[in-house]
Amino acid sequence: MKLARLLRSLCCCALLGRAAAAEWDVHRFEGRDYVTLENIAAHYGFPKPAPIGSVAPAAITAIVPVAGAASATEFGITTAATFAAAAHTIVLDSGALHLEVTPGLSEVNINGVKQWLAFPVRIEDGRALVSRLDVSKIIEPRLRPELIDGLEPVTTVVLDPGHGGHDHGAISRFGFEKDFALDVALRARAQLEKAGCKVVMTRATDIFIPLEERPAIANRIANSIFVSIHFNASNSNADARGFEIFSIAPRGVPATNDSVPSERDLRAEPGNSVELPSGALAGSVFHALLGELPMVDRGLKHARFAVLRLCERPAVLVECGFVSNPAESSLISSSAWRERIAEAVADGVNNYRALAGTGQRPKTLAEYRRAHAGRLQLRDAATP
Ligand SMILES: [Zn+2]
Image (cartoon, rainbow, N blue to C red):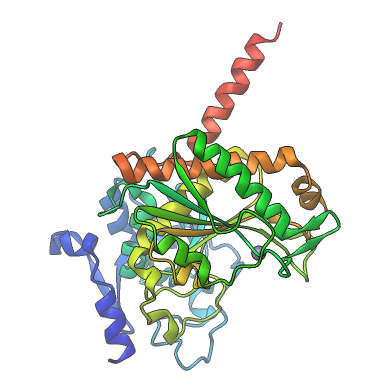
């Protein structure tokens, strides 16, 4: 099947399919469907966005480097020059929902958290356009996870501390990633069991387990979810810091860290059967982490790591900070800090369990921050 046709067939989402034809103003560019931002704003009850031309353009901070790539046109990505006149962030807020997009860029902010669309927001005739695939696979499920169809109730959480045995993972002056990850996972297990949840560990000691055996454990347990716990490191940037979380890239969506889309994005992996629940789990855990701990938001990302690709249950891989960053590695070496990470991960998992079990919308970063501010005010009021 030709790539463009296959991509088109992937774009037929429930959201746009259900909507009346007149409701969506669909535009075609290079074989892909786009809808206008005005259309998206009207659908979600956001105020009408200002026309692009009325706002002074700001500098572009990042452009996918695809100029001249053979497949670029087919994927609807044009050169930086096309977008250079119009890069500014458009903020849409309805009180309940929040969306920020920047024409020319894939990076967006959904409900307060950084994430990436499959394709950059286009600008045509002074209007911003978002791909239909992005509306169905990323914007809709992340804005309103409570409307995702077919979430299965969760009875078991499979916790997967990264690395182990001869595989140390990243190394800091305080110790190995494998040991920090195991410690956080054991603490999260205690938290989850306290909340009445069954927990299975892929490893509870310092042993090596091949990558493909880890998701297989969750695949054998009905109504389970899979949470892999890691710490990050950068060889080239000692300043790199913050939390990030990965879920399987939906079919047709490039991995966030790939600079260009590829044929591989179109392959159906076992993990694609749960790509929307996995994204919702990633959102629940990430909002809780950032809501509970004042760390840098590196974003909700997509990847095709073996543990995500091969997992047929909702699955995420969370990177709980950088052992290569002096300040963060010092924090990570503290058992009190690791306990806070574990509590936040467990909280996010419990929010997903409530979503899957009763349709309760997971708590957002803004809701965590409001709760913290309320607690601080109470504490201040109690101080004589
Ligand atoms: Zn790791």
